[in-house]
Image (cartoon, rainbow, N blue to C red):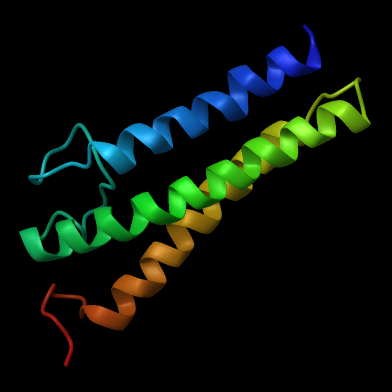
Length: 114
C-alpha cells in the first residue's frame, strides 16, 4: 500500500470523524454517538460540556496527527507503524484533556463545582 494512501485511510479517516463530531455534535445523551463515558452520561450539563470540549480537542489533535503522518510519508516512504502511533496519541491526548477538564468543573456525582 502506498504510504500516502495509508495516511489518508488511517489518519485522514480520523480527521474526517473529528470534523463530523465538531460540526454535528451529539445533542442529547445517547449510547451511539458522542463522547460517551459513565460520567458524561450522568446528566445533560456534563454531556454538553464534555462533548463540546472533546470535539475541539479531537479536531485539533487529529489535524496535527494527519499533518504529521503526511509529513512522515514524505520523509520515510516505507511507513509502517508511525501513523498509527500518531492516531493513538491523538485519541489519548483528547480523552485525557477532556477528563482533566471534567475534573476541574464537575464533581464525581455530576454536580458543577463553584
